[in-house]
Length: 111
Image 1 (cartoon, rainbow, N blue to C red):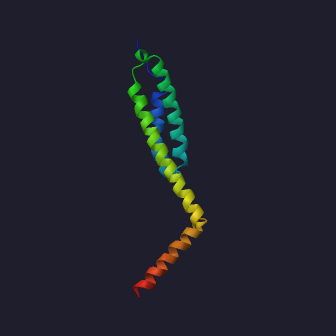
Image 2 (tube, rainbow, N blue to C red):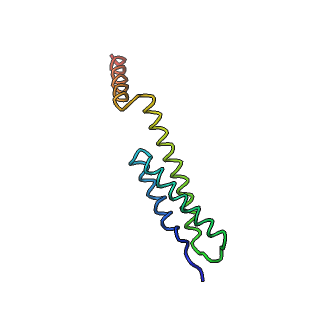
Image 3 (tube, helix red, strand yellow):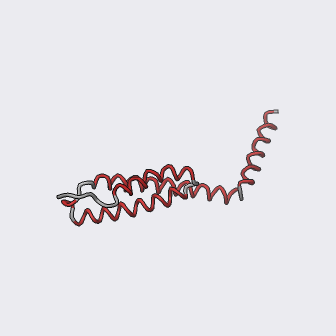
């Protein structure tokens, strides 16, 4: 009798939600959720590899693991880009000031 891996569905759901969360929370939500999904998927992967004949939803675990890795990389890139922008501009006000200066230069160049 085969059974389902215990965390496969949860890992898949968290991996999918991490895509949305990375865009809505400056990457931090996606980072946290994708790490949790990756850990759960790896836990089920190890369980499956001990007794592969006992489980039938390993494909779902592989999908969750791949999605979690991609979401983790995407979230990390978003976090790194926000940190770099913050370090470069100093704050959101610095970014606004830089944008205003660029617009002013474009206006002066057009005249």
